[in-house]
Amino acid sequence: MTRTIRLCPLLSIVALLCTSISSFGQYSKQSRILDYFSRKSETINYSIFRGQPAPSKDLLILLEHQAKWDEAASGPTNPLGLRLRFVKVDEPVKQGNPVAMRYRVFADGAPENKVFSIGSWPVSREFLKDSDNIYANAGVSGSQDIYVNGQGLLMTDKPKPEQMRSLRAGNELEVKPRAGRGEPVRYLLDSLDEELQVVGTLVPFPVMAEDQGCRIEARIAQPNATAVLVIVEGFPAKSKVPLVLESEGAVVHEVLTTDLNGHSVIADFPYVPGKARGTLKATAEGKNCLPSVDLPWGAATGSTPKGQ
Image (cartoon, rainbow, N blue to C red; front, side, top):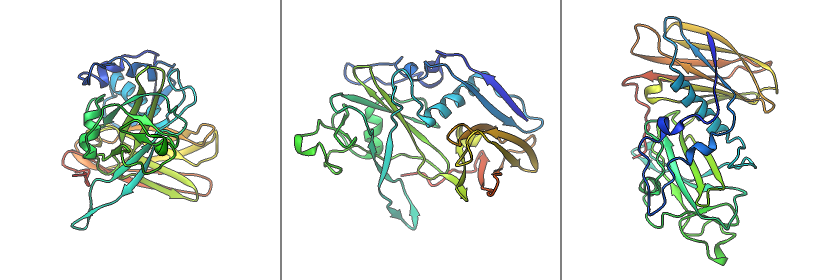
């Protein structure tokens, strides 16, 4: 069954995400994350299986913010709708299994004359506005300030003239997210003059299927996949998309409405009464396509591979 909740602007995202944001140097902007969510929120749809209690309003607010973050929509601190772009550096193999990959980060269109900080928001943690977290994951050290060159490449030092058009400057920021299958890591690039915020979402091991150009993705929204964002893309604009959600014998039928870009998202809570773990199957139906994905949920399911 589908439920809809209307969200109000200027919600206290700090209480949900930033209970203990680290400060670095003399620069601390604990309340700045509010700016990205200060525009009027729309509504979020969610689905639950029979016998399951309705989710709390705070959790729905959190999921709405995740969805908005992933869309990187324009707002007061990002009027042009810029978004972070991630380019994989390599994919090392350890004993036949992939380990954490490294990514360069681009902020295409971001001004070159600003100094930035960067933060990350893994599913399993509060929002971390701390460059040390990025450096630790990337295995590098250096300045906590972040710069952008003429190619949009994020750098850990101010680019020299000969580095302004470079894609391999030698001091580019590389992130090495620790994430499992279907697990996103969200990043925020925040200018120190408080004028620009650019967000991006990286899913190293996406749970995604495509059929005739129609795509469906299941993205973990809470630890152990107790909440999941189901995303459809590539469908006709402003169309109705039937969606079937199945979990351990329980079935729910939903109908999504796409936006002008053929995109729609719904939050699902895959738990069913009497089950501690299981598998969520999500299938979207288009005129000539039927993409489907499966995602394990519950304790001890394991969202491997985790980057080590």
